[in-house]
Image 1 (cartoon, rainbow over the protein chains, first blue to last red):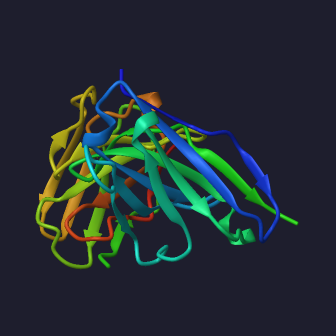
Image 2: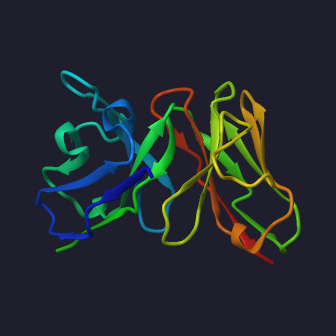
Length: 120
Length: 107
């Protein structure tokens, strides 16, 4: 059974850093893209970027230009886990963040979401 | 960036009725358009990909159509569990983008 399990909810202050995770199981982690999507409170979905872990060498990463430089996406193939990272959080980063396995750029399996709250 | 515009924003219908949702792209996406369902407190679920293909396990009452810039999602007869928000998404160009969503609510 394909599963994506995300790390738990986080409460942070503006200016702090954060790394959330998404662990894949039940499929070959290195042969599918993983995408990250943001859903701000009461709003719609936005793709932030995606990563292809690959079998060898560096992972392939693509960022939505709207999020380029705001976040970093990475993966640890040895533990089948993808990450989304911020170096300096802002209040406007408050949202639910979802990871999804991408099959031909369709999110066919999704994580349960990670709520990130940034407040002073 | 391709902008997807969904209409209507809200659709008020009764169980058993037919629902027709629209998604219009700012430029052609060929048939690279999909639909997701999202219920409160849940992650999105893929319903339709490449305009008209049902994803695994999706009931036959859900169907998709269209090509180029105009697409529709049809639910032939609404079941109680179908009341939710529906999003379209295109994969024709990077970045991948979603529409703003249509909420299907109980009348």
